[in-house]
Amino acid sequence: MSSIPFFDLTRQYGQVGDQVNKAVLSVLSSQQFILGETVSRFEKKIADFLGASQAVGVASGTDALILLLKAAGLLPGDAVLVPSFTFYASASSICLAGGHPVWADVDENLYVVSPETLENALLSQCVRGSDGVFRTREGNFPVRGVVVVHLYGQMADMAPLAEWAASRGLWIVEDACQSIGARQNGKSAGALSRGAAYSFFPTKNLGGGGDGGLVTTEDGRVADRIRSLRVHGSRQRYIHEELGYNSRLDAIQAAILEAKLDFLRGWNDRRCILAKRYTEAFSGQDVFRIPRWREGGDSVYHQYTIAFRRPDKRDRVKKALSEAGIGTEIYYPVPQHRQMAFHPSSGTGLDVTDRLSASVLSLPVFPELTEAEQAQIVRVLMNVSQQGDV
Ligand SMILES: Cc1ncc(COP(=O)(O)O)c(C=O)c1O
Image (cartoon, protein in one colour):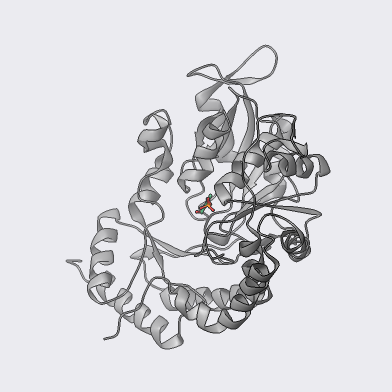
């Protein structure tokens, strides 16, 4: 039996190598490596693709979140609601920007926050002062905003979230690092918030040849602040208005991403076909839950993630798949409220997050996965997961 990787970037390079090589060579010939025309052209193209009025390239998705949080208004000592069931950087960015995370649970079927999970987090971990501001029970930090994470390629439903946040006087920024091209009721991330952060980590749906990130926003002031923050807090050479960062999207990365952008829609469509095929193949079994896709949402299926009804089964099935040569991943085995970096145990009422961390398993869903490979994954998974001793 041949082995099936969880992800294989060399297959993608086989398809786009000529265009990527040409793009890199053109930057090398120009010797213009930092910002300049290539980065501006890519920012314009990706803004059009996403339907955003502004796009600003930065050095990584993590930096996109840090700079966006600052531009959204986060001040040192502010608290920000964030799901614990996410990648570490959704929350570390809050701390690195000077704030404090307040952990929220997620919807068990959709893997993202809802107004209910945010309200529960706020009421269970914070107290409302006479000024109407909620402050954390631990530390007395004022709650000012929310990071909404669009996990696995599916957007959270932004309209009710925006309404809820406004009713509580909070701003929202969106972590869209896994969901480039996703839409909810026709709108991309960033349309109903201060802005959205994207990552171009190589294995993302649109991946660079290294690290890279982007912020999109409808707010010109947010875009302007990020353009300053990414060059040492400077709008004019050698004049520094605030403490900023060195966080530019490299011209070489912008050129690679521009070349790959032409393929992104097709790749996302292909992921969609693979996800639908998994869903059809798995209906009728009840050993694991299949992901639920939201009505009115166009997921980009960054991951196809199932959740085992009996958590102890997940690790045994993963091992059996690995022995059969099939790669899978766990996103994420340790929830953020249990990470040492965040002083664990400060979160309460995160039962769904704890359950999901113990039971989720992501299957290969990269665009170049063949039908024969997918059929083999389905066959082996159905077989091993139905066995009583696995
Ligand atoms: C949900 C989420 N947030 C943030 C990040 C951080 O992005 P980067 O690795 O580009 O810093 C990632 C990707 O790794 C991610 O998946």
